Picture 1 (spheres, rainbow, N blue to C red):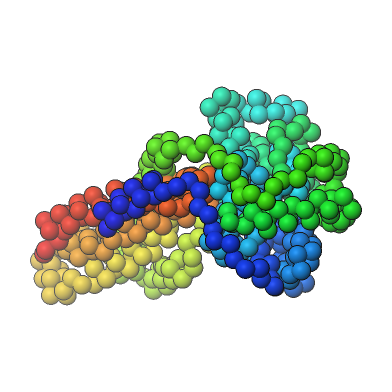
Picture 2 (picture 1 turned 90 degrees about the horizontal axis):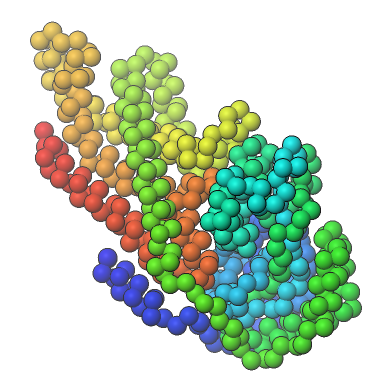
Length: 493
């Protein structure tokens, strides 16, 4: 498998930067992809009917489809995967607050920016006087969405202003964490910040200074430049006749920024129907390797700490279920069933966000606790089965010799049970190593999260995915080899 991965890496590195999709015949349907999880005013599920989506991107897609003589068909796609879905041909058009950037135009047919956004800082109300710009946030934690313009700004500022970027998978929790004191500021689009301010009316303010500006675009496959140009013409026409303004006013996002932006678009020359020729200078994969290695070290550290906690708790739970009184056994059995019967992702959310009103755990500690508590339930079942596998004859012989239950557990039952449990315990550790990828949902940037950021930046999962797989193999294979040696030496009673 490693040889195949290396071959794929070599082929991926030699592959052309730009892939042209074969133009397809026009369809009666305009399939467009967006992420309803992103919420209003972009795309959100209608509260009255969750099967229906609404938002200004929904209205614009409907307008485009009508002017093209097609009917719109929405496809739910995770925001970070919209571009790849367009490239695969899953949808004709991707739009859900997608930011215009050079590397995107290097790989896809991209429309003109139909909406202008500003990157703005949000800070706690009490800090509004001292945290006005990024320069004021030296050494502070600043949250944002991963793989966005704001995230790239923060990564650049990390090297100069020495602030600490905190990456999120959604645009809701950065602001709740800001109010709760987990981050000192949030840098995101003004549309997102203003929506958060309506949702959380107290606790933070938006600073008036604009950190950067950008535009939202629609993305098509590289071979669809002609369709892209048709959409550009429609957007220009709808800007001129006020249709886009009416849509933006409906969603409360029309302001002076849009007036200036649309005037600039209407004055700009019309693009040709030739395919995109703009190329971004892509960083080599070696440039991302240090970040991936840091993510791998974080993954390993979390896994080791969580497994240590799981083993300690699992041993105690197993002993309690074997030796404890009836109420203790019922209580511990309930814990095991709850932890095994609910997703670890849900447990991480509850531990980190759900309990924030009671205790505000640091993200790394919450990750270790979440994985450790979950795997303790599985470990306890392994150890309980191993304890019960020790024959009653040996236990009775030990009691006949005058040993008490603690001595029997420590000298007779425990050592034999450990040998039985060694192999499945090792398998669980390798599984935990891979499950640690889930902790990115609570802002821990481990190996898989670093890979996702890398893949979004380069617009492909091939090379990032292969590198990530190789690093996971580099972590897990030595552990498996070491476990086999330990099992060979100690595993046979």
